[in-house]
Amino acid sequence: MAAAVGLLLMLLGVSQGLSAHCDARKDGAQCSATLGETVFVRLIDDASGIRFELRKEHVTLLRWRINETATNEIKDRSDFIPINGTFRISDLQHSDSGDYNLTVFSSDGKRAENRTLHLSVQGSSSLSIGLITSSIFGIFLLFISLIVVYARRKKQKRRETEDPSDLTYAVVTTVQKPSRSSIKQKVEEEVEYGQIKSAG
Image 1 (cartoon, helix red, strand yellow):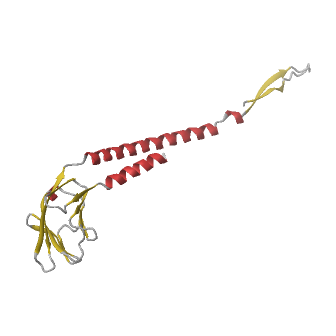
Image 2 (spheres, rainbow, N blue to C red; image 1 turned 180 degrees about the vertical axis):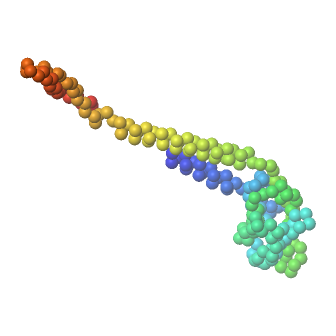
Image 3 (cartoon, rainbow, N blue to C red; image 1 turned 30 degrees about the vertical axis):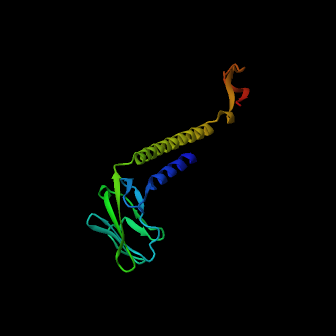
């Protein structure tokens, strides 16, 4: 039963940890991810001391200004990791699909580099559906296992209370003996014991 619980916890952990990685350090990168998962988009090698903007269509999603985030339009489900220049977007939606434009500026504020990347967010993951199905099946098996264990313990307790090896049997019979008195005939009862039988 402990193995079933461990397997169930592992499946739940894996289902929460789905992610995709995309290297957008070259112009024209094509990235694909699945609806609801997390994507890690590697924009640059190191963000220390530089400025850049990441735009999707006409909206500036991320603006980085010399060691701090100036703008993040989707900050409730994204963040920028400056050490390795990675932009993380979690809980991907269909609206996240599209063309992104990265503009890197030189120290004097002039445009130094311009790159594009295309992110495609696809429908529900077959792996996610499989993991959810496996989790439900695992919970069902765990429930059945608990019922079987409960029934066996209850049956065992019933056997212990009704164990015939602890019982001792005695056969008792009564015999009537006629009286020798002529005036009154009295019937006396006498108890006669048979063999004592012990089971077990």
